[in-house]
Image 1: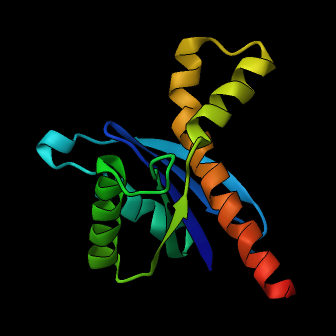
Image 2 (image 1 turned 60 degrees about the vertical axis):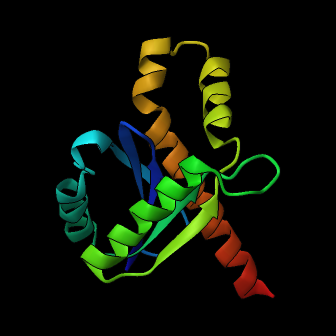
Length: 144
């Protein structure tokens, strides 16, 4: 079974899934959401869960730099609770401090990615990093 990584923003959710072995994360897509209409993209997430046979979620937790939980992290945790309720699957929270900055830096260093294109892929790539960090941590725990 695969793991789905999610980078939850106020307008989009970046989606990544692991390979069948749980070794690598691949970006899938960015799902549009509208928090004010309470449209959180769960219909599309459900389709992807079924398509990729997902067994758990890893949700990025954007903690404050001092490690505390702020408003954005609370919203991500609320999203995770809704995932648990809707899908009856475990949700793991992965610290994602500086992930978006890391993705933007990678895309800028690549040199041929316009600002508009960066905006279109940053959430999906952040989801990849969130999920890959989780997968790497799990692999390290198995080695110990």
